[in-house]
Image (cartoon, rainbow, N blue to C red; front, side, top):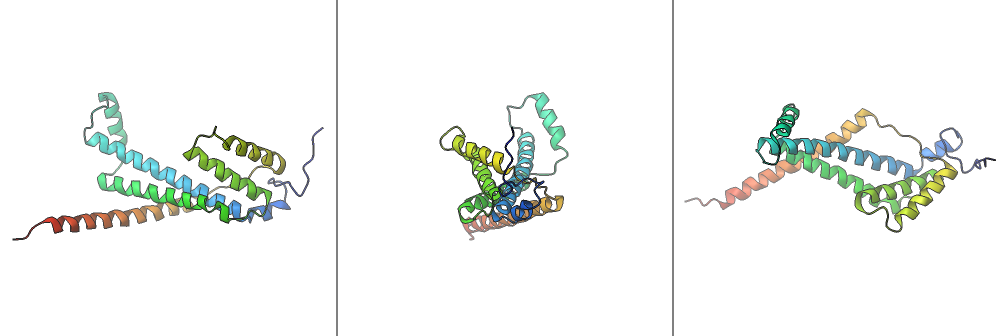
Length: 200
């Protein structure tokens, strides 16, 4: 016989009483921002990797077979880029990942106001461990077990969808910051280079 979930604990999308409260939970909103920051950093990582591949092919780095080199050249011929664009992409990825880490670091400061919020916080903690640690070490399997139990009782997290505008806006924000940083570093390098020149 199936055990019915108590209405106060149910947090599924079908439960209209719990959904509005859960969607306003600060922990759930934090998780949404964290997921978006991670997604944007992944997109920027892909851009950076494509540019890196192009630089390796264009610089003639050995180790690529003639066949794979030709294949990579065909793929990267459609990509505009060079060392400066690569530097911008690398810094933009760092900005996006830094934002995700800052959101992750704010977990202890955010109070969940629903079981769905508690699940969101645990999802972030377990998700962060996938990036930085061994998920078989204590306490990660134990936390994952608690997370599964909570989901069985309260339901899973609401499915969120991000608009393309929000994604593009996030990418553009980090890209613009990276362009400014690279330009400042180039200018600083040019100034340092000029300081090294002795004028007679």
